[in-house]
Image (cartoon, rainbow, N blue to C red; front, side, top):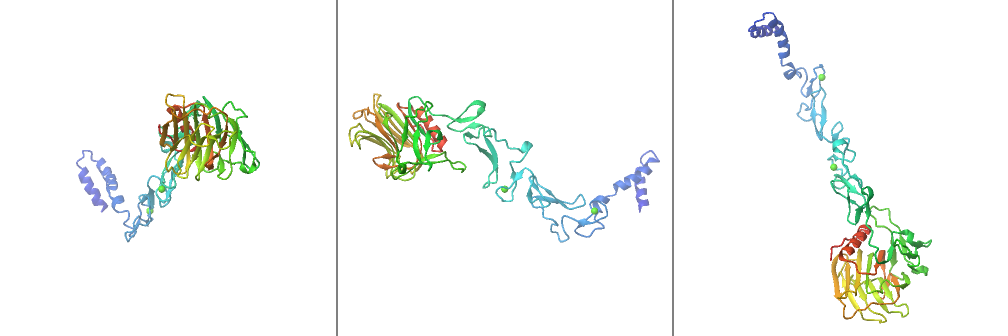
Length: 422
Ligand SMILES: [Ca+2]
Ligand SMILES: [Ca+2]
């Protein structure tokens, strides 16, 4: 047979002028030209076996004799060209049966589908910038950037400052502090330097947090059982900073000689979490005549935030504005503003961004004009139920833009609803 093959090739090659070379070439062409590797490798192997590497040893092929796969290659395909049937895995998968995630991939949601993970390197790496870190979401199975407090996604990474924060030195996002011009009192439950705590963790005194701190400007409680409780920040992710918690029973903090609502224009802004109504939040009264309140801020049975202002002495009457009809209880903020120095005198209340209430009080209003007894956690309505986070009292009216900046600060810091310009 070989001789015939040689002769046939020689015959074809005989067309080549060189008489000697074709004979040698004929033998080479013959060997190389035999379709042995392509058609005969399994000639000596039983069905379902192969000898693709031509070493004479027959090993299982990808398909068994019965036509079924010899190995399951979940996220890949079988290949026996090397002489051994193995799984070639799709991108992202690994393991002898392609049932594991390859390096740099993850299956955080356990659905068997591997996605790029946070350990991926090179072009597959996920850069989350200076204010965040990569994390694989356990519910979606997809990795993403989780931004630190104060940061949000900018150009694909956590390189932008979140609302209420501004970029300082080195691009570090810092909370934008509220205006301090005409800020008369600033109580901040996250500023533990301003809190005098008892061994039991109750608040004996809560001092002014303004930069020019004056120890005399503070609210106190001398009766042990009437002291609210300091609640430190929990370790829970996304937890609010610490708070001063009132039990709705008899707890309040107070100060005599309070002048913060005694001018023509003042503005009280409170971040709080009212957990039950009614809740008496803030009041100022005539210390010489019990019951003569000039200012009350509270949350009604109906959950509305109410703000009452009246000239003292007067045990009743005055003007009232109410915001947020049927506002759900919960974390939020309330602004009570009194502006009597303008042509039109206004009382104004806004709470949690819901419809604001403004009334013209030009015909009835006058400033209080005397030193007051300030009570935080109590009004004639009752005692505060829940947390007070922060109280800012300005002895002027803020502009809409200024007010929004203060609310942005409070909302960002205490994770409260943001404002919409009223
Ligand atoms: Ca073989
Ligand atoms: Ca997955």
